[in-house]
Image (cartoon, rainbow over all chains, first blue to last red):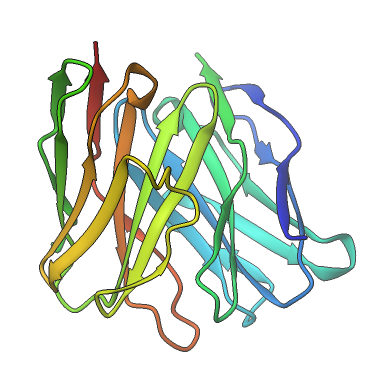
Length: 113
Length: 115
């Protein structure tokens, strides 16, 4: 069965320090992997995507993620957190060709001044 | 800047009433999704369409929910009759699905409160 696990429900960092949001997936097929961000009372915005090209993917707002097949991971990182990064982040798997979309439970990022 | 639009943005209704939510996907996108978000369940996929045809609605309570795409510019989600447990934010998303293209673009959501 396919699944997505976000290992932390909450992450708290200080402004200017690195961000690491962890995501592991389980899939029998080569998945397409995404990170989305949701600010309070807003819709979801695409941060970045992996679709079997480069394993290190760069997204918007300085975020990037690395696909590691051997670890079945797709962790999201940012070198320096900004107050505006405080939001909920979702790791998403879309099964290739099937359109079936699986969302992780989300990680809420808090950024302290 | 093309966006998915949803109407209404907020809806308060009484139990037993019919609710219709509308979505206009991004022009040219061939796939439309409906999601429900609650604190308890998180994001749930309710149904999705490709080229206006329903592909999967297994996430939807069949007895009261229905989803349609009357044309390429309009998707609807109906609840009849509504119940308090249907209170949630309902998101529509569209995507240009094709080879290697699986990203989805989300609308702002409809916040439904059933009293």
